[in-house]
Length: 252
Image (cartoon, one colour):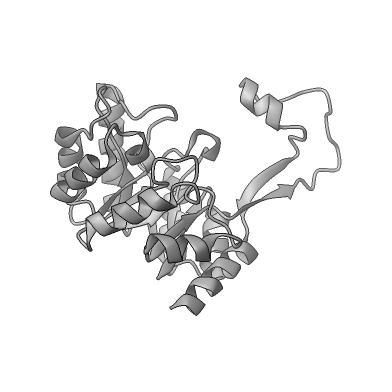
């Protein structure tokens, strides 16, 4: 059993490792659900972490239906990850009908070789989870991140358990979304899963002495509503990771 941390920066990745994570899914822009991290973030993480680094390959936030230019960008990012010798990559592509895009996924899997590939929560946005799972197994994905199609993994426990049983060891079902020290053991026990995904984030206050209280950097309504203080940012907490990793180790 183990804990994967969704790290939104190199600093978060280091905190994840120090806390006992077995792997990091490296990304940026978590307010959008995570997008591809920069070349420098990937390079520094791969060179300095002892645990595996799996960058997310996602050119933008929003849905998982990509145009040709976006698809080409995904290909280039995968090539970079191969050059940097990442442990694997994470991506997800759907058709406009909510099916797994088999053709494009297969093309990226072939391009990524010999790196293994995992499918992210685009899976939860598909129109038929059991059918989508069989497609991912057929394509050769080694792992799929899921909340069971629910708002978070705790609410999706029953579906996650069914998916674990359906997978029957052919692919790893990794519960994620809203997992924390308070619920990880219950989710582990009731789903039957072995690996779990969390960002384990906390707010870090700025060390700026001068603060401009009238100018805002946020542009979207969502950011403005939730950014009462722009002099802060989110980062993975080594302490939260440690608490969850310890609970998992006790269950082992």
